[in-house]
Picture 1 (tube, helix red, strand yellow):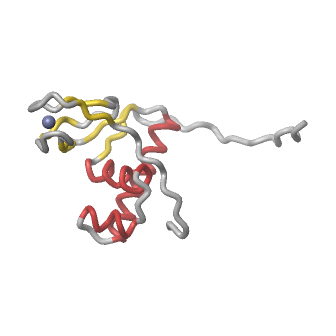
Picture 2 (cartoon, helix red, strand yellow):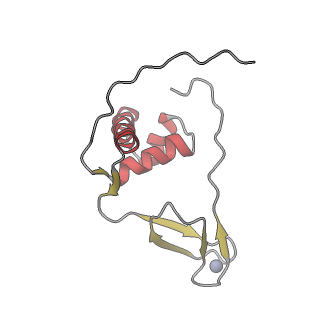
Length: 128
Ligand SMILES: [Zn+2]
């Protein structure tokens, strides 16, 4: 039988304003670092910025994500965020509004259906 769990102490949960707003670059930083598992140097290179700048953007994005989760706030994104899709059948590429909800999208040219999965987390040493 496992040992009984030690008691944990919590301070009061803070209340945040109802909406936490992300910039598109903050979402991209979260995606590259936490979903794709790139190092900060690799991710900064992809975004065309320096590693210290990437670090600053990522830190702010994580703070906002924590505020949204812990404070139960609604998440908003500034401006219009688009994703670029490339059809694996016909090579056609198009833009569609960003949405975290879909996992499949249809090519407007040939009707080929593209499926999406979250990339597997890559294990790395010395990531930070
Ligand atoms: Zn196509």
